Length: 300
Image (cartoon, rainbow, N blue to C red; front, side, top):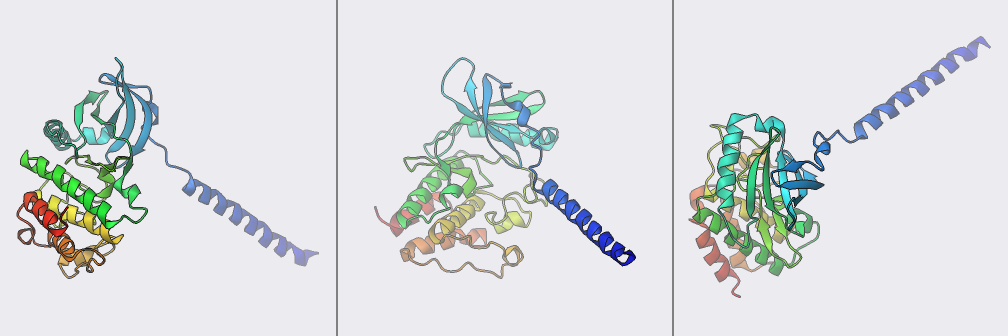
């Protein structure tokens, strides 16, 4: 009888351990609370938020309706903690103003911006379709990839001509409409995450995997950094993989080169590889030159 007591003690301890482990697993798998879930129905400027579309390091994006009636828009509400940073506020207002002056078929139009109850917000066109990141879940034919690339280059060439640099081009920042039109959004607005920072000396601006080497080393990025990111996006569309994923240290030291692009016209592959040159001076001088190179690589 007494010899069975230790066994019961062991079983009881195992049961307690399993219950504790299950409770801990449940806590870890539970969704983290969203600080902006209470914004639905709130008014920002002359718009009312009606549906949350998504969220990221900078804040959340909502579908909103004009109070006076009209077409729905997209409103990005910035995380309040970012809005309290004076450097971020200055950058946000400056770049929102510049972005609102851009008008091009391949750029998402910024319609307005402001502040409501201490929260900065940006009003943009609501573009139907899916992001390029979603489109990349399936393979993309070379002809479609080239069409998307040309549109992105056209839109960014227009932006550069008006003194606006994006600084964070990547598939999630490109919308593809049902008609196949590419629309670039989120111009130069700083975001908060492990690899996003404000424009200060010695800090990184851009996204790991798409940021140019000069950006990742803390140097200022100019129009050629946007060209580099366009090249990386093009490489991913043509090959189905990122050129430097998981190789950040080697990329920063300049010891890694992306694998050749196969199955596409050689002039197109060469143009994309040149766009991704490590040294800015080895890339095309500007996006007008990229437009010309793409036109010559695959004539219409």
